[in-house]
Image (cartoon, rainbow over all chains, first blue to last red; front, side, top):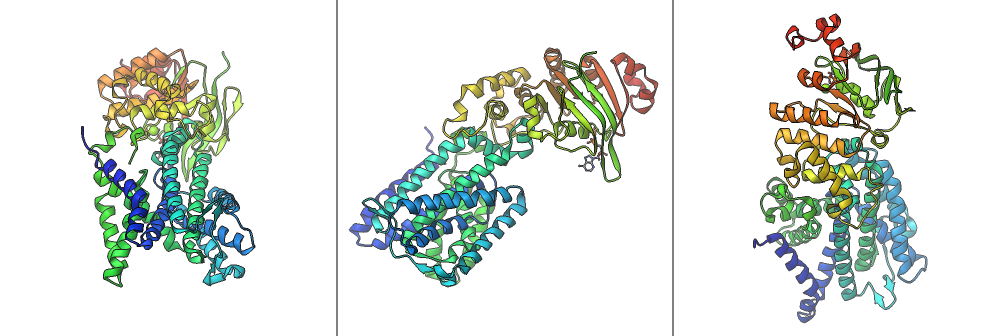
Length: 321
Length: 252
Ligand SMILES: Nc1ncnc2c1ncn2[C@@H]1O[C@H](COP(=O)(O)OP(=O)(O)OP(=O)(O)O)[C@@H](O)[C@H]1O
Ligand SMILES: [Mg+2]
């Protein structure tokens, strides 16, 4: 039997993530849990983005916007005295779906570089929209009085948040796996591969892409709800273009269109940032070249490096990375 | 004469100053093999692209199965039974041959808002897909990535995908382009086998193939139909001789 390095790595990562809180408690380093919660939350957003970027081939440069929508939902509801958790989640999902439907319907009329620019433009508009919301702190952002509370679960509790992020991430990856291999996913992937042929076969790709876009927006909004619980703070910076860029980098770094790529990407990017920030103030100077190297030499991302040879010969139903 | 399955009326299309389709009226009867021949740049592909809805004609109309489809979006036309293939192979290179065809089957198996069951294990898709691969002689290559197929095999896959949509009229744009003699012969054999079960609009430079399978031939020059008729008529047509067919190819 040939050992699949990717599978090994993934199992290892999942096991470590599942057990990390134990280590953190033993070592009395609760900060670890917060740091890794952040990684998983951003990994979750990246997984959402991956659905349309990796599987759909659409480079959205504005997905941080949906993370911000999720976070602002928590902030706004609390600000207006709405307690309890279900509203947080339902409103975040509803708002991101509505905004995603509207913006997606406009952006998906374009393609290529225009799609990148228009998604970026919408994210920037959202940025200035949040800046203009004086009641939510405008430019400075706003503290959130309390987190999301689902029955006995308080998501702003460090351990609860950690495992919520972990389970949600696993759930979304599982869902993505079903989705991309079902008929829906075949259409999304076919449209990435050859949009012209899809139409010639009789498949209207727009409606499927729009659906994928909305699903990916909703996943990002869930990540936003968790992020608000982590920081208990909202700020227009959440929708800044650099945040969208970070999500893109995570997906590309981990491996476009692989199930676990976004998580691997999130881990590597945030660890790298952390590491380089300790060594030098100018860490961004070093991060750039590293990313360029990955793109040049590992076109399938880091997971692609570990993939068995002749990936192109493998039928795509075996997507498991 | 039977009611035509497809007809164009005074179709016109130009690119800038260049006329690619010029006042073209043409009928394809049910189950007819109607070949369209003409020199390079005559507007054959442009015609197919208008019939399939990828290009919008500047003027004129297209009727299919008794319906005016001139303005119908491209993706709807295969659902009426009008499917095209491409001169320049247009496949899903990162998928297996079987998946390529399964996607074509899926296009005609209801909507694709199905989020749970793996398509790769769906007999409703795979069985017809295998059948289409068998028709073109590609069944033994089902699990090979489309990008890894030989050129001739990709051409066969191209046809299998179009066939899998179960068309009433198949628009074939140079199906033999780039095929070796053996593959070409197989393709002619396939066309002869399918002949009578559906209609074809066949664009092809291989005159032996055209004269072997066509019921009628239309000759296109500068976007204009200079002659339409049975193969013997076309062979004997003086205009066609001068405009297009070399003396040798008529000596068949
Ligand atoms: N999108 C386009 N824009 C501009 N000109 C075009 C376009 N498509 C085709 N043409 C021109 O229209 C004319 C007809 O082209 P078309 O591809 O239909 O010819 P064809 O008969 O299919 O030729 P071939 O036998 O080489 O495939 C050519 O002169 C071509 O250069
Ligand atoms: Mg052509």
